[in-house]
Image 1 (cartoon, rainbow, N blue to C red):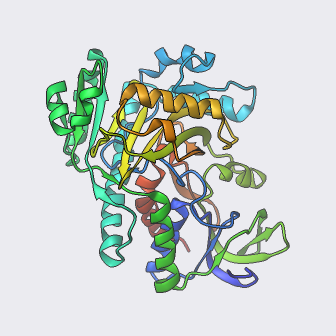
Image 2 (cartoon, helix red, strand yellow):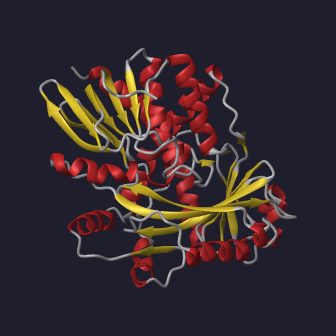
Image 3 (tube, rainbow, N blue to C red):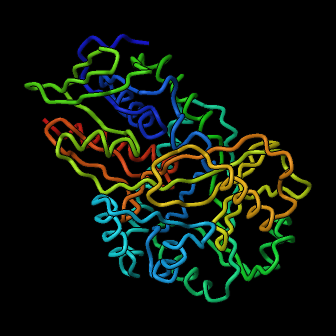
Length: 408
């Protein structure tokens, strides 16, 4: 670990999946980059135990017309899967209004396609990375089934399939019998009305991927690292940026890329930079596969759950708690997630012996795409990846590298 006492060309703040991907994109181009992280190790935030899916095809924006019907349950806490904690905080108020403005059909389609373009760039960048540097992270092309339990949702699913087809996305709407033929584990999904099959979707362990990518940067690109760097002040000093940690370390950099996830909101506020990024708390648990564990990834659209098989384990993720800024897991909500998963696919997992559970804060923008732009001279943002941080990370890193190349 570096003492972070020297000058560097570019400091990347955050060693989550997005920060790692950004540092890699820069280092691969020969840029002198320094990776800075307040935690003691990489990938301990929003991507540590996420849904384990690389969802290059399913980039549907979070805000859409269906949101209006969900609002009473969200705000009243009656919806087990999707809740919001109202507050008088100006940040929540501004973000909430912008989120609601995006809940139209036109903006849903526009935001979905914007994110899809970045997802496809990410898939290309991931393929190129793995060709150069094979990383073992339980990666496979599993395909995905989005399962519906409401006949009224199927016409909208057809519309989204047609919307993405122009970008080369392969998706098919299946009836229940066809869905079970693709994934026999769905025979236990009571009330299923149909499913969208995306055969090219991928899965893997994001924590293993992040640590593998870090090893690549250490061994092949000699990227300096500063873990445990609890950044307290970030300020402009002439042509450079100065970073000061709580324990007295200092780093000077000509340019800074902020990849701090939800922590970026508080980090940027003293600079007068207010970003529309909201904490949306999510949960997951990992356990042994059940007697009817799916091999295809499953998304239960009614309960808002995802099931992803990782070798002999299965990862189940879900729940969305808007404006919850504490990542500490709450046992009651863990129990809710387990109960919902058991109702969805009762034989998919060993629910009685859950091995581990987790909660994390997803940094969500009102339009469901990340913010990648210059916010001040020499200061670039790469934040707000929401539920798709791992999916969008590699492409986001490439966009940042291209942006920095164009800056003086």
